[in-house]
Structures are given as structure tokens and as C-alpha cells.
Length: 141
Image (cartoon, rainbow, N blue to C red):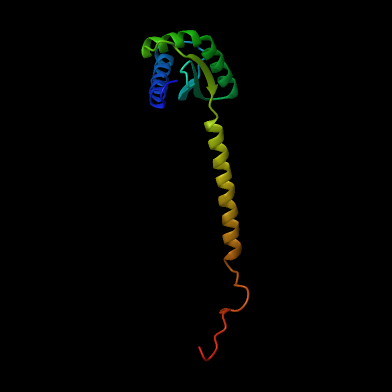
């Protein structure tokens, strides 16, 4: 098993190599506007999960996934050349759900802000319940 520091360095290097190779060497017309967001390695450094996002429609995401699948061998070769490790990890491409999750969180925050605004509007002309000074003072205190 490799140390965590070594796995992290290798994952960062794989991320850079894959991104550069996609930018300079892959000329597949199915490839959309893609961003490599993260790479995670198994503890034995044999398998790498490459997370990516695609800007565009669902159809563009699907065509980009097909282009990545067809270029997986060449990308793995480039990773092997660029890292110099004894065993080049196999690559698995995973569509990252970060943009969808971020959009959902933003929607929830907008709903919470609207609910807060409604509460503040209702409280604007309201009076406190009970007496102004609920604590009774005795003359001997």
C-alpha cells in the first residue's frame, strides 16, 4: 500500500496529464466543454477514478462520456508516460454531480431567504405578547 501523500501527488499528476491530453491530443468531435475536477486512487494505486463535468445539455454529457470511453486507452498510455510508475492505473471516468448539487443548494438558499423575508414582513407591525415589562418589581427590592 502506498502512503497517502504519494497517492495524493500521483492523483494530482494524473489530473494534470489527463486534462492536458484532452486539451491538446484528443480531437474527438463528440467531446464537449469538459473540466477534470478530481482524481481518486485506490490504496494500491492500480485504479483511478477521474471525475469530470461537462458544460452543456444532457446530450452533450452523453456524447462526451462516449468520447472519453473511446479514448481511455490513449489517456492511460499518456498517464503511464507522464508518471513513470511501475503499474499504470486503469482509468474510470465518472460524471461529477457538483454543478447539479450546487444548483440545488442555491435553490434551497433562495427558498429560505424568501421565507425569512415573509417572516420579517409579518413581524414588522407586530407587538410583543404580554406586558411590556413581564418581570414584576416589588417596592422593597
